[in-house]
Amino acid sequence: MSLVIRVTDYLLNHIPFILLMLACIVSIWIISTRDKRRRSSQNVNTFIAYVMLLPVGIAGLWAFVFHAFFPAIAARFIGWQPSPFEFEVAVANLGLGLMGLFSFRASKGFRTATTLFAACFLWGSAIGHIRQMTIHSNFTPGNAGSIFYTDIIIPLLLIVLLMLYNSKSKHVFITK
Image (cartoon, rainbow, N blue to C red):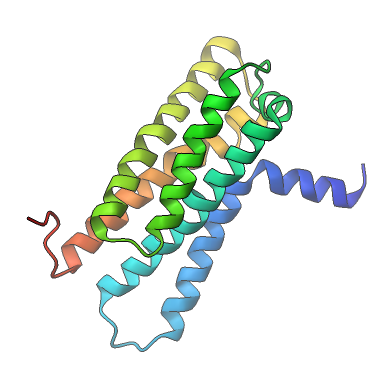
């Protein structure tokens, strides 16, 4: 197998994790280059924005494309047989991806709604992965690899970041 094919395969197998790391790197770089007098809530906001944009938004669209247009590849990656269910997973990922993209510059309320959707969808997926591992011994990369871990970490990180932002922000969490 050529190096290009191996690198491409690796990147496609780890997109959410790579985008999560990229979101952290970009956020740290932006924070380190801005005026040190900026409030810490603005720094947390930067992290939230890039986590929403990259591992939620772009990764959601990536998953949509694979499940909608390459369902046999997506199913094989997860260790499933191809089925019409791939389209339902595709559309759920499309919704998550679009919410992530819009959350990049959205209000705290919209970001909270996006986090709720991400937590329900991704943690639900993680539970499905655990069931596949324990009941069916499915340890394929799309079921037990970095996708599984990012399904847990991304919503948890967003919840922590939103809580931090809320504690550092002068804005009221729920507006009337």
